[in-house]
Length: 223
View 1 (cartoon, rainbow, N blue to C red):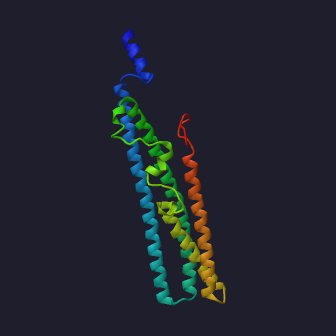
View 2: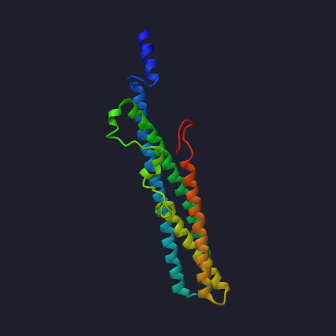
View 3: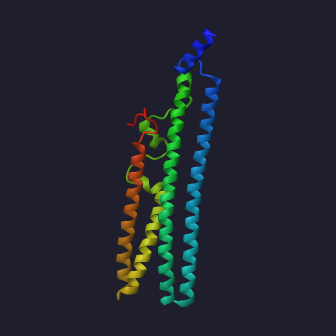
């Protein structure tokens, strides 16, 4: 009995051979996290596909209205209802895909932490399994930083489309109320699109920076 107690204490202290139950728990958690990551990726791409499908259908409808009635009151009314609605859908899709991306990143951080358990009890696996230091967790997922990086995420792609839709709505409104439709539409549309894009990109960058500096566990070190 004393030997068993000593062995259990050694296992709890992190030395010796780990309990089979602990190995089973860690392996199950690892597989669960992988499944959760797949779910977040599927949700992000699914939401982006739904948004792009709505944009495609809406623009086809706008083109049919223009063909049937010309660029008149019906076209402006339809466009000023459709384009802001699509832009709003784009903003909320951006927000959700950003949340999904951050959720996926946190799952990856938890997986990297679990890998430390494998390396602790089987250090000979270091050359065959990938150990992810805290400072390289974004890099290892393809998020290498830089000014271009926000545009290549799902949320970044959605933000570009949403900004174009917002700019198009503003341009259409400016063309309706102005005596110089082309100039007013271009100026208003470009300005609004740039403002919306900058706001969304800054929000995305700040969110990624904040989560990268927030530890998942009290004893986790973030570089």
